[in-house]
Image 1: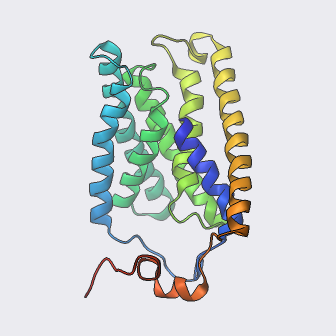
Image 2: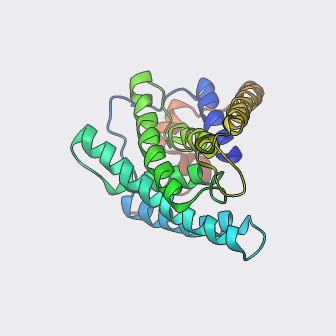
Length: 237
C-alpha cells in the first residue's frame, strides 16, 4: 500500500508544476498500444505473485494464501472495472480490464496475507469500481494525470488499506470481526502517508522547478520527448 499510495499522491502534487499536456481536453489522446498494455499487465500480475507471496519469507500457508488472493482480487477488479465502464460508456474495453487488474494489484497488497479468498473477491469488486470512478474524476476536475497514477495507484492504495481494516480475519481481526481499532489504524496510516507524500513532493518539486525545471518547452512537446530528450524514436516508419 505505502509505495503505491505515495506514488499516487506524489503524482497529484507534481501536477501543480507540470500542468496539462498540449491539446489535453481538446484532442483525443489515446493509448499507444493496447496489445503491449495487456502484455505488460500480464507480466506485472505474474511478478506480483512473487511480491505478495514472497513477503511471507517462507513457503507456508500465509504465502499460499497471499498467492491465491493476489490471483482472485485483480481478476475481480478487472471485471468490476469493465462493468462500470460498460454501464458508463456502453462499451467494456480490454484496456479497462488491464487497468482494473493493476489497480487491484495495488489494492490487495496490504490485505494479501490477512484476508480469505472470498474477502479478496469482495475487495477486488469494490476497488475496481472505486478506482474506475477515481479515474473518471480527473475529467470532472480538469487535471491531467496522463498515466492515471492517482486514480489507479492512489485510490487503489487507499481502498486496499481501508478494506484490510474491514475484512482482516487471518492473523488479525478487522471491523467485520468486531475490531474497529484496526480500521482506525489503517485510516491513520492512510492520512499520515497522504500528508507526508504530498508535502515532501511539493517541496522537492518546487526546488526542481526553480533549478533544472520540470516541464519541457512547447516546441519540445510538439516534436516529442523521445526525440528531444533521447535522440531516438520508437518507430522509424
